[in-house]
Image 1 (cartoon, rainbow, N blue to C red):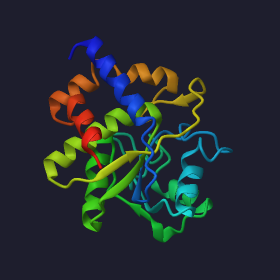
Image 2: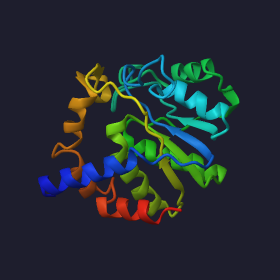
Image 3: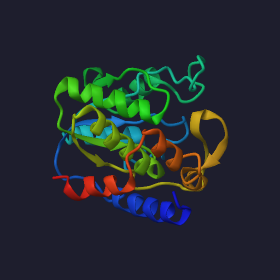
Image 4: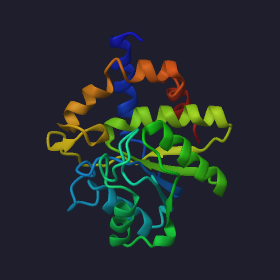
Length: 222
């Protein structure tokens, strides 16, 4: 994959998904696991994962929330909370903003984005959901959506997915990176998304659809 084209396509995808909020109510919210200090500003409902999820639930924009059911272990490891806080902690935080336990579903535990794509869509298919809002860190949306589209191609179960991105991000604040390993910032992680080991490798492996397929999905999605 040519580096200049990768950057151009990623930029287009990130811009499109940053303004993807649907006015319609969704069957569910897919809330992707991120490191413990990457969920945003805990004082601002438009800048924090949990406050935003609570606001969406209270206004009936979403009916249920799906979270990663793992204990926060790193990929290939078994120490709870090493990669992220884990499902139990996130459930408590969601309940603290007014979401009842009955509206929080734990998927099968996942240890990377592709596994989350597969497990979240499996929950959706089991419940016959047709629409979902997706919430992750802003720079991560292109890869998350390309993983969902690839998984929908493989399973034949298609949904209308929309990116409900945070509307306020402190791009330069210190935060923990992927798998809870190193300190970085959201700004620096944009460049990490464009590393040769990401999109080219994952696309070749079959974990992601192409950027052209992502653009086609967004163009034809109703």
